[in-house]
Every structure is written in C-alpha cells, then in structure tokens.
Length: 597
Image: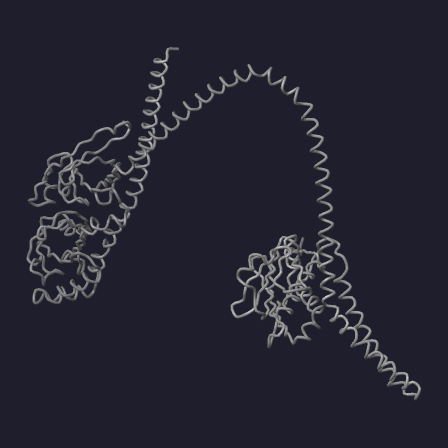
C-alpha cells in the first residue's frame, strides 16, 4: 500500500473516532443534565408547594375565629381592634398581608393599616378570588398586587355569621422569597428557573429581566390581563434550537444581561396553581467532558498505532532471530557441556550451602544454650544463697529433732519434721526453676501465660535483686494474656533483660524494676523499666548488634542480640528506649494467642 494513502486512511480513522467519541460524550452530558434538571425540578416544585400551600388553611382558621366575629360586630364604629388583630396574626404566621373585604368588595380591615401604603378603602371587588368567595366558595389566585404592585398568591374564604356572608377573609403570600432562596433550597447551582402561567407569561423567575414577559408573545385574554392590571407583558427574546452533536435534545436561547446563553429546559406542571415550572440547566460546566473524550480517543488511537508499530518491529526482529537461529544452535551445543559442568558445580555449592546453614542453625542453638548457661553462671551466687539458707535450716532442724527424740518430746519432733519437709519442698522448687531454665529448648511453641512467665523469671533473679536492694513493682492484669512461644527461650529473654538491669542499677539508691503488662489490638506488650543510667543515644541503634556491649568487662555482647532473634522467631518485636525519668525500658511485643483454636 502506498505510504501516503496509508497515512491518509489513518488520519480519516482518527477523525472518525474523535467525532464518534465527542458525539457520545455530548449525548451523555445532556442525559446527565436532564437527570440533574429533573431532580432540581422535583426539589423546587416541592419548595414552591410548601412556601405557598402552608398558608392555604390560614384564612379559614381566621374566618372561623369567634374573636373575629366579635370584632366584626363592633363595625363600623371602630376598625382599629380588627386591624390590630390582623396585624398580630400576620406577624405570627409570617404571611405577607391579611385583610377583610365587605360584600361590596371594599377592604374594611387590613394588617398593613398602619403603613403608608395600605389596603383600607380599596375596591378589590373586580378580583376573581373576591367574587368567588362572595358566592360562598374558597378561592385561590395569583396576580400582580393592585396597590403594592408586588406579585402574590391569594387565598380567600367567606366569613359567615349566622349562615350569612358578611365579609371575605384574604391572605396574600409573598412570592419573592421563592426567587431569593431557591438556589440554597433547590440546589440550582449553574441553573435558573421560571414559572409560567396559562398564556406562557413568566410570573416567577430568579432572573429579574425574565419576570412578567411572555415566551410566545401571545396576547392575553381580558381575564388573564386582569391579573397584571395595567402592566404590559413584553415578549421575551427567546428561541429554541437543537443541541450541537446531540440533535435529540433542544436548547433554549435566552438573554441574561444582554448576553445570550443556552439552556437545557425541563418542564413540569404545577396544576394546583395553574402553572408550569421550567428548570433551565446550563450545559457549560459539563463541556469539559468533550475535551476528555477527545484526549482519550487521541490517547487510545496513539496507543493503537504504537502497538502496531511495536508489533511490526517485533516481526522484523523475529525474522532476524530466525536468521541467526542456526548459529545460536551451534553455539548452544558448544556451550551445553560447559553449562552441564557449571550446573554440577552449582549443585555441589548448594549442597555445601545447605550443610553450612544446618551447621549455622546448630551453632545458633548452641549459642543460645551457652548464653543461657552463662546467665546461670552469673546467677550461681544467687543459686548458692537460695540453697544454703534452707540447707542450713535443715541441718539445724535435724540436730534439734535428734535431741527432742532422745528426750522423748515426740510432738515437738514431729513439728520439726513438718518444717523440714516444707524446707525440702522449697529446695525442690528452687532446683526445679533453675533446672527448667537451664535445660535445652525443644524448639516447639506452646501456649504460655505471660504473668506466670514473668513471675518465674523474677524467681530466678530474686536473690540478685535482694542483694542490691532492688524493689520489684508489678502491674499485671488479672486475666493473664496467653502467647504462642517457647517458654524456655522466652524466659531466657526476660532473665537476660532483668540481669542486665540489676547490673545497670548497681550503686543506685532506691533501685527498682517497674514491670507492666499491657494489651491493645490483639497485642500484648511486656514493659521492663529499670532506674539505671540508661543507654547512650548513639548506642541505641547498635544495642542489638552481635558482639556489641557497653560493659567494660565480662560482656560478650550476645545476650540482647540473641534475645531479639528469639522474640522475632515468635513473630514479635524487642525494642529499647530511654525512660523519661531515668533508666532504660525494654518492650517485648507479641501477638495474643487465640485460645479457642
């Protein structure tokens, strides 16, 4: 195919894809705009109905008031009490105006009687809502005010005294709040609205220049013109056209401040008022999607061309690879022997590495055991003291008991024997503690009570603490949390931390350990805080390194390194920080075991 023709076809395809995408985006825009306008019209219609209809029963309630009837009986002597009564009702009901009309159509009392412009003495007998009420029917009507020249909606009812119509009670609803507050209440951001009457005249709108204009220019009938007194209803500069790239939708062309704008119109009737509500949604804020459609098509088309080019390049490379295939096969055959030998060497290296890893694991276990035995060596003085006390007591009890038996004091001898038995039980417990601590771990995890583990570790270092006068402050929960760990190894971690703490507090007055167990979010943390000098800030980052020690002598630097690896093997963490007051604080964090599983 000719190269120029190919590029021409690609360009035509691109332009067609852009046109289709933009048309689809435009249709989607107007569909979404229609849904939005429908929703806005629902809200605005409900708002209009509420603002007007909430006063529908007010004239009837006033007309049936016994107080109103009593005031009417004083007429025509004084209208002041009646005017004051209507004013109070108008203020409490928040309605525009309340007034009474006599059967001749003359206003005899009004809530605005004290104002400069009021209705007293005005003849409203020509209004249909007055005429209908005088026939005994309630009525409603919308019109331009004859006196106030303000648009309003009127509710009227007859006032009956002994089944005779003596007056008409009228409530006028001010419609301007609907125009002023519709943006906040109906959510008409970027939109406008108009309410038209039966002759397509605009009675309400949030745009002032649209009010009291006609969409069609159709002449009003005499009865319709009566609504607007002498107000001339001009024809609005208005037209309808099809939307570009979306001919199924019609756009209204309207002027706002001498600038023509396009709107998507959504109309709905308000039959209870004889109106049609039109919401005019501006499509301008949604036009950015057309650019997005253009950009997406361009990106997709460019990606497709790039993919085709890449495919073509791959085909060219494939041909080149086929051409070199025979040469490569020969080289592969030549290298096969070398690779086979290399493979055998790798296998031997892997076997040696696995053997080395096994030896390292065994060495690590031995190192853990050695560290444990080193701890026991450090605690040998404690063990000696713990055993000497009961052994000395046993020797004394044995000598005393022998003398008591010789003298025939068998009861006292029996008491001594019971004391000797208790001492032997104590010796058994002490030996068992050190025996359990010193034996090699099985390497199997099991459920461990945190509280018991802490108490066992304290039992091992108890004598060291007593020698240095170190006090133990415990904060343990009543219900001990359970963790999944090797109890021997975890106890070794606690003993190592406690032993280091005792050594760090050597020479410290009122030395003490504060040990607390805290639980949060299925985690248990053991906090061990001493009152020693703490850890130098530049040592904190290296404190868990193997062979790193801050001790001047007698320290290999393995205890904390091994302790951290033990805790990590249980899926936990071992951390250290300097306490705010004094000393170092070690924190062991472990997951709480699910005892139900």
